[in-house]
Length: 338
Image (cartoon, rainbow, N blue to C red; front, top):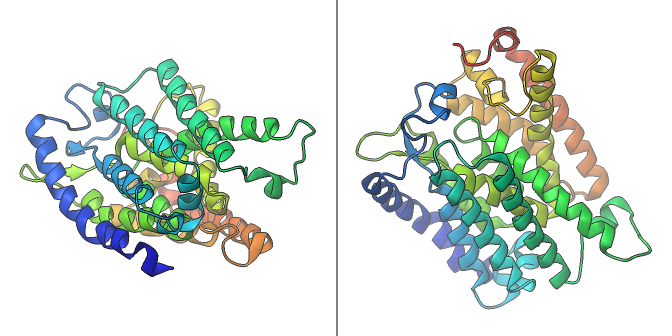
């Protein structure tokens, strides 16, 4: 199968880094950097070098390029196959996720909640349209659902689920490299070429950045796109367990402290690990290690083995937090301090 999408694999491994360098230089020249001067994000991420949020644009360009290759096999993986068979809604889905993220990244402090959620529902509608066009929804086999009305319940499940997944991935983008590692793991079988591109962009996201060549951020473009593509491939859903557990823990901590659950802070996994003395690279490796067992939920060994992997990732997440208990002790009592 590799021969069928070999040219695109070469594009992912060779052209993506080259385009990343060109894009970073261009973004610096036109001032497309994040966080912007005066943005609230600067208060949450002290010490961050302004970076160009172009990673999602590059991933979207690769995914679109793959869909334009002749033959459904060229896309590779379950997600690529569905998007290719759902023409033109697969391409529309990619463009909608990229456009929403670009608008959010371009606005100082990002879009307000209402227009952002409406945009996410628009992207989610594209996911549903893609599955309807491909004549198959994934949730029947997964949840053993057979609603009398046919696809209505499953379509609603996907519509709401896509919005939830995009927000779960968006909140996990709290430290450099985390969401790219999610993408690399999730798409290793579901959409291999996008997974390769995530790996190719990882060094640009982890590097310190300089005045000559800024850091690369995925931005909301990347987190929305990766979230939407994960929904398209049920075999990759298991990788969501660690980001979902992390978001749930943070929300409960905020509520317990009497704070608004939607306001950002520094309680997330990567920030806790860094506060405990881990480097950014070590935090990414630690998070990737605990996500790896659930990365291909049903891709290897069937659903039974997939559930074992999900349980292993959940246990690994708790162990990782326990190892970083020094960070957690400070985490309970502080938001933006340290």
